[in-house]
Length: 129
Image (spheres, rainbow, N blue to C red):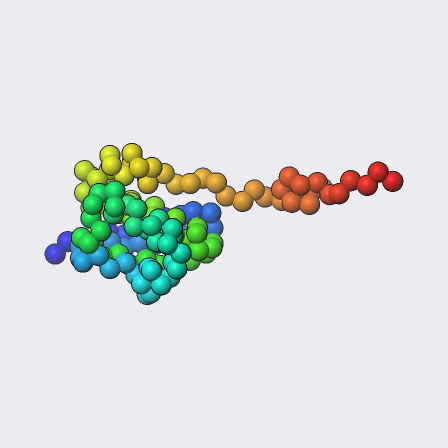
């Protein structure tokens, strides 16, 4: 039997621990079906993206523990985790996944608030008098 691969995906504040094994195509996120957990269609597409790229939607089972961040950050973290796991399972998937941009960790995150400012860059309202 093929051993499961454990990988991690991150995006903004979200962290997804991904366990991929050979199977029938079930994807569980925090013990719920991913279609229930990610109710929005475009988030479901994010999660499926790595499998669609290599035409393997029903060849692997995925179990995910996602925590932190919001629903979108978690979906994108899951996407990265799955893509990394598929690379470990079969290195031949790598060029296709890389071409689709699925192996890049999105470095954008919230900029910190600076002193003397209302937010990261927004100044306090200017009063002339």
